[in-house]
Length: 77
Image (cartoon, rainbow, N blue to C red):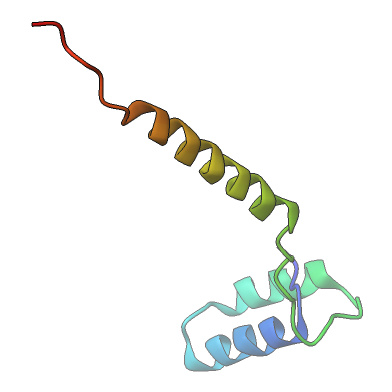
């Protein structure tokens, strides 16, 4: 698997120096990455804003149905 960022490459180099990974593993990753221009850090993908709107509508619908269910019914004696 190739490196995704310069920071990840530095981290693996440090693990190699500390002896936590084998030189073969580091070389494999380095070889697969090649000479790509890597970003300094990889940012997580942004969450969609529309997902929040959908959950708000669901909560409002639950409140309406909950009110209907709590109506007291008269019982016949």
